[in-house]
Image 1 (tube, protein in one colour):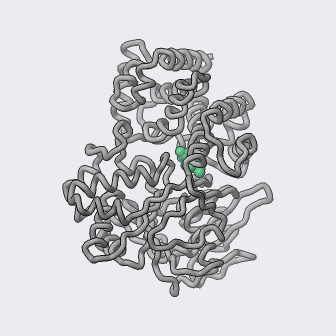
Image 2 (cartoon, protein in one colour):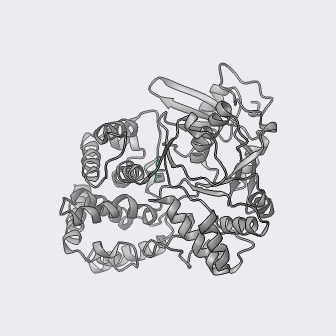
Length: 473
Ligand code: CS2
């Protein structure tokens, strides 16, 4: 079968990219060109350029994988996204990424682009764990491997924060304006968090650089949402059948997509609102809603699914007792939210339940269960703290925490940057006969206010006991 490319003869009514890639100049450098970026921001950017013009071609950077870069180059920087909705499948070709580089192979190319004043936005989707955030302090974790490296060798960085800081340092030495840093990962106040990390790292090399970034730079907060499961052979086969060409970068996604952004950019931005993005003064209430309702419920579904042998989110939602728990959790989490302009929370919850249950979306519970230490704080622990201080009901939050710990207790290996510590704690829990204590001893795993709260401790212990009984039945 022919490979997807500029010249491939595609079958049927395939929506081709509306852009002429050769004529678009670079405007955005994006770090982390995995599935989410390609099915979300890359599409908003393509639609915005198609509608309103502007040179906002995306220079894609992959920090580690070179495969994705090779595949993009083989396919003339084109790939397809299949939207799987109630009305059936529809496929489109996306062409807003105009060049791509693997930082591990060609770091110089990445640094050159960062220094190029045509790049006015550096955006990021590198997953929660790649930032090197110390959850307890809110600052840099000096033990994070990429952070430790980049503090030592700031001019030849390997991590996301290191590249941003070195890029900004080069702009400043050249007398150029900084680029806007646009974090699109699922962290609360993601722009503020990244700003703090960037300033922390900049300060260790030059206080004046940090001051310049603080004065001149911009780090808008964002809330991003679209369910984009990791692609599988089935995804690629489905795309091949629709396209009549082989696309090794094929993705599939739900129809729903949402992007809320604070309008604070130093050197302009694409007309993303023409593609459906919402610009607001304060993203905080939107992002709290999304992290606590969607992502919080996702973690619940993931650990329930993993413990009950259910591979996909839709499988968990197909069990009425589990679906009821998901609803109960979102109703509890909703009580910790601030009013969200333009959004009615009960409708948002109903919509989430439908999105999760969609039979067309094969989203693995194992994928969401990864990196619990990086996800649980903002999804589950933060609302627990809020509930406790309001004197509210914490059962569902204790239940998700207990599911996570029970999941860890039953694993031989884990996908988590703190896997070794978690597995050692699990071992100790078995030996001591106390399932919670060894986890409480892990530094910074739980916020201090929870760890020291006897009400929370006993709620989690009770839920762990109930889960063990349920699983042994
Ligand atoms: C998921 C998210 O993997 C996960 O942890 O909860 O990737 C989720 O699918 C997205 O945030 C949806 O916008």
